Amino acid sequence: MKKYGIPTAKYETFTEMDAALQYLDAQSAPIVVKADGLALGKGVIIAETIDDAKRAVQDMMAGGKFGKSGECVVIEEFLTGPEVSVLAFTDGNVVKPMVSSMDHKRALDGDKGLNTGGMGTVAPNPYYTDEVAQRCMEEIFLPTIHAMNAENRTFRGCLYFGLMITPDGPKVIEYNCRFGDPETQVVLPLLESDLLTIMQATASGTLADVDVKFRDEHACCVVVASEGYPLKYDKGFPMTLPETGADTEIYIAGAKLDDNGTLLTNGGRVLGAVARAETLEGAIGKAYNLASEVQFENAYYRKDIGQRALAAKA
Image 1 (cartoon, helix red, strand yellow):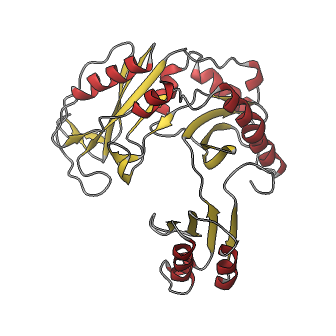
Image 2 (cartoon, rainbow, N blue to C red; image 1 turned 90 degrees about the vertical axis):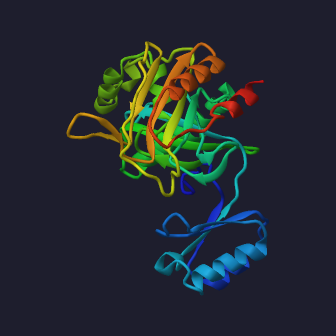
């Protein structure tokens, strides 16, 4: 990304502790310090002061806090702003973005608690305006595809852009080369075009010839999880699911059938209750009605999915 000028957080990588500490003297806080390797999800420190950042560097590089993963350290700019997920179809030349979405990563209401794989989503994301979308296409989406082509790593399929709309414009937080979960559960129900036709076009390099149209509607997904997720939780409870209609759907994730054909919980995020409607309020209301009818012992879901999006639209 640095090589091809794709906007992301400013960063530098260090293998010498003294150089890292010297670099920090010229930076401002908050700032992010990362162990450049696997650290069980604990190798990222958001330092509120430069002294805290220096301590984090010393812990990693001299104290061996994360073993070999801390021998190389990344010091990165701390970005602020609303996050947006954009999935996009690409055949390696053309990029056709899907409708944007907003994920809710924290386990508890009010965006509190531990990070999870996602407790719910809404689409479209109100922060992803037409102006932001145009900048993303010109500054991020197409440059990413062109960069991969230049590196002889042409990509065809679904490319996931995790973005932050900073005061300086949109920047990339992460890429995934797949559909994102639970974003997909609100994006694909809004797709009007035939998914298989689009997939075939991405594979054959003919995406420019295919229309990718989305309904002018809203969708909401409420994840029903096992109490205690993402840490310790019990599983193996029988589930009772409600009937779904033309504009509602239940996507099962952490569940299994026992030998008698009974559906049992078998994971942290058990299912997604999804609804679409003409308004965001309507989609949220329908999704929560559906989630409230899901029954199993220790069922838990956030009660505020979509509230940030509603506030942004107000």
